[in-house]
Length: 266
Image 1 (spheres, rainbow, N blue to C red):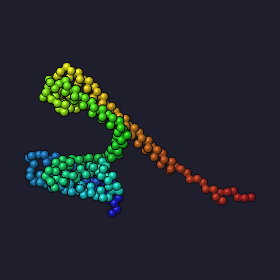
Image 2 (image 1 turned 135 degrees about the horizontal axis):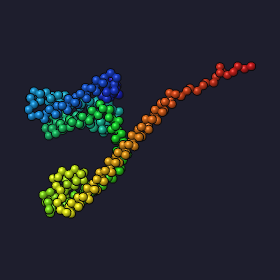
Image 3 (image 1 turned 180 degrees about the vertical axis):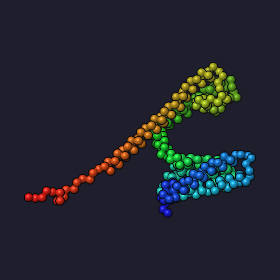
Image 4 (image 1 turned 90 degrees about the vertical axis):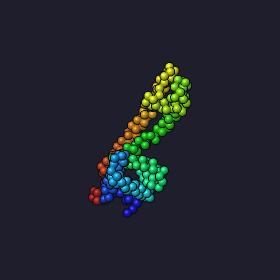
């Protein structure tokens, strides 16, 4: 079997084996999610826990073999490895390293990343491509607002420290400790674990909240606008393609003028 055929099998587009392989891989992902959930039950019978452990290693072996196969058969292995799906596939099989060293046991938590692979089943790859294209078109604007957000966060942490550190040394004892309040207030979450009690601190907080709303809202509007523009471009390209296909099918062949078409000479 050629490399492109193997990739078609793994992608689920092969006419004979693709549907079966896609069903098996997605089923393994769903059963793995169930196993991860059941592992957290303390009263689980030992036999069932051991069965799930064996099943998890089988799933890890399958996805590790799949990732290696994709890497070997890909026309551009490095491009695949650095792509979104390549990173998801890698993180799906990284928990296998936990068997090599006990300190890497935390990698088992990456198993949940496999659920992202179900986006392929939902045929959301095109939507992700559109989102990636939209973010790429406004990455300069987003970088500017990220810089502004960082500056405002720092100003908020310093300001609330100046106003509140004497009144609440346990909550605002230093600028790094004040960063938690700045992040929570800046995103308008407001857990209530720390808040200003002085007049100056409350006035400063009111100003920071209005600034924070603007800095958060503008990037959201920029991304929304980019997504709308990306959808419009995709729709325009689709319409041009359909018009081109329609013109190609309805184009009449030119008449061939040969000797048989000419009128007989008198």
